[in-house]
Image (cartoon, rainbow, N blue to C red):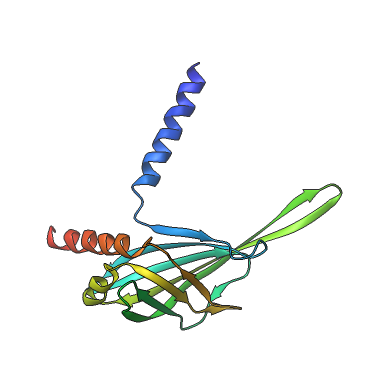
Length: 165
């Protein structure tokens, strides 16, 4: 009984920490063999704001000079230039019968510079987003906003941290 309480406490703590994370994301699987997990967050360095995007997949990496294209639900268009922060890969194997099937996961992270005026446009909601990657671009169309308003809220929180210093 004591161990069950400890395990439940640890699970609750982990859940609480994850619920306060400053990221928003989605999992996208257009075909059964392909797919990716994308997370976005907002960062501030000196006076510049940026959106940090991390894509986890089995083959996609950001280009050396990536771009993020965004179309809002009101039809406005943003194109953000970025820099690659890092690429990481992990390899593992799944045993199926007497055969080991290799599995590789690539995590690629890029930082896209954005102005406060562009964050105001993001508050209208993101209808479509395209990240320039290799071997193919990541593109996702949304029926309702999943990331625009959240990124705007993250921007407001970063701005408030600076004002309350």
